[in-house]
Length: 276
Image (cartoon, rainbow, N blue to C red; front, side, top):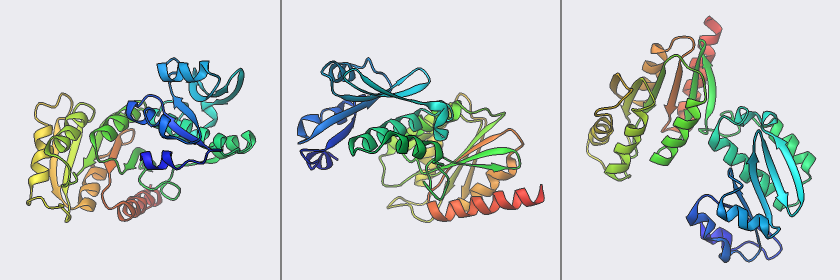
């Protein structure tokens, strides 16, 4: 990813996450200027950059702030639907990065605001990226997260949403390390009541059932999960999870075949709405 930073024009801007040490360390490689972003404006990298009068984007209370020297531009999080009033942390980070990028290319602030207020991360605009649907009064979220960091971000996001009971549908990519596959369900086992493990056709070099066993190992001693199922087939697993849902529940579906799974979910939600 450093290659992208190294190829910024001398008149351009590189947008870097100040809270990620590896990313922040790319700044000297950028031929142009840097816009740092982070939720915490007091982060040392942010504080130094701001003190030098350079561009930063950060969160201040219920708003995102773009700052350069003494100049400020404020965008209220309530006006950015994908953040759900700032409750979805990783979406707030995505918005900060987007604001910084748009600012860097000189986009008018009115246009930036209009884009943020009108953007909906549904399966058409951002397939597999926290797509929220309704199924008979339950909330269904489809996401392509497939590593421990993604699980942590998704759990934080789900924790911000109301739910009577939480379930998750998950498989694992066979080309990941054993410990990374296990860690995903260690994280999920502390946040979800029901976990449905599924195995699909593409095991990426793993023996039959090997990924499922690693996921099951991660759930050993899970503090919250009480119900675990193992199912072969992504769509069968999705259907099993949907059948268990009651109004007010929440189900996170970690999709593997993104387009096909989203189409299947959309069809099931549409059918449920038609028969409600």
